[in-house]
Image 1 (cartoon, one colour):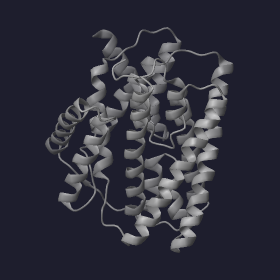
Image 2 (tube, helix red, strand yellow):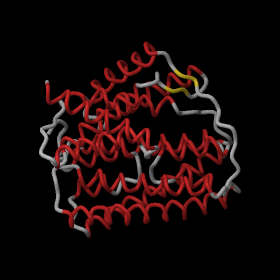
Image 3 (cartoon, helix red, strand yellow):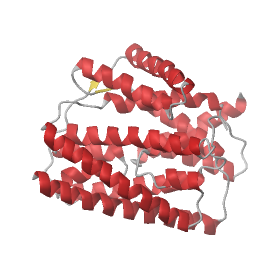
Image 4 (cartoon, helix red, strand yellow):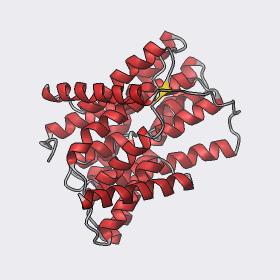
Amino acid sequence: MMIWLRTGALGAAGGGLAHWAGFPSDWLLGAMLAVTVAVLLGVRVALPRRLLPPIQACLGVAVGLRLDLHLPGLTSLLVSVAGLLLCLATQIPLGQWLLHRLGWSRQEAAMGASPGALSVMAALATQLDNPIRVILSQTVRVIALVATVSTAMVLEWVPLAPTPASFILSAPASLGLVALAWAGGRLLTRFRVPAGYILSGVFTAAACAAWLGQPALPVAGLIPVSMVLLGALVGSRLRPLPAREMAGLLAAGLLVSLSSSLVSLLWAGLVGWWLGLPVFQVWLAYAPGAVEAMIYLALVTGLEPSWVIFHHVLRIVLLGVTAGWLMRRAGVKSGS
């Protein structure tokens, strides 16, 4: 119990510091980094694996609540979704090929090459013996994309619009959604549906958002706590690597991030030209990760935020299903 409390406290301290510093995916990456440093210093850290299902349920709920189905133009949307699928079908094999060339295993390459959804991939990567390759690859991509978004905002490449207020659920409603998502996830897991808790959370919360008639946010504190626990859980499973290998992993993350970004820009250019939409708007929808930053930029620029959110939610669901299926196919079982 003392080890669990120590790990949670380290994660909370790291997440809080990263949040104060304005770090991307602050609570998750800060907690992960703090616990990883503790591992490197020889401190005993651990968290029970049974925390993972409720964390995944919380993550799915947070994503599903953002879904807005008031979308402009069904025909345009179908064309854009087709472009997203083609984008993923190009990004993932290219990223996997690059990582295979660098000596990554099939499971590591499948999740490391996944274009985005850091928290989903981090949750799934806990099933690996040492998820450090996946975590670093995804983390580098998030930082690179957030830097790109920040540059676009600082240089005023797009006009800014007032940020709309978001409806916030009460604590009982938020916890009720998580409980329903957890129960649905258990049922899906019994039928061997990959990433069942995440998918259950997305669909449960999306139904709630549809009933409310607008996207929403869970009660304040729910997502930071979930991300701190997930970051601490992942960090406690990492194992130290030599400095040269760490540098190689960072370089691999940048390489895959660059390739994924260029592919998404190519497809965004084609779809934007076909539909007569701003390329930057379509790129925000196709961008390989940093979903919070992309959604935020869509909101502050007024570039059809519902369009961007829909594509990112769809991508997260597809990536969660695909990664879970690939891991199961490769023989990596939940709870290993």
